Image (cartoon, helix red, strand yellow):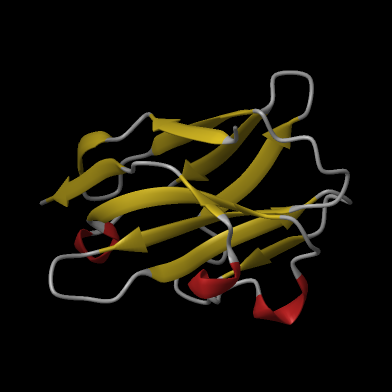
Length: 125
């Protein structure tokens, strides 16, 4: 059974940094797209970044240059380094897994087969 468990969320001030982690277990597919999504109160869940089994990365325009997605295959862990955080980054962050390549539809949440339970990120001034 595939399980995704996020951690690393918290409260920071504007301009601060956080690193989110997503521990993956039970995933045996050779190809995959791993993504980070976020959902703020009253808003739809949106794609933040994704990385596939070849190491190709994708980012939402709103986080380019500030967030970095990476993975440690030895630890079966996905990361999201978030720098220069601002209030608009406040949301629940989720990691997700899909068994196919990311491609240009990486941001579509409906394509992802597995989801974690989320970790809260709050940015205040």
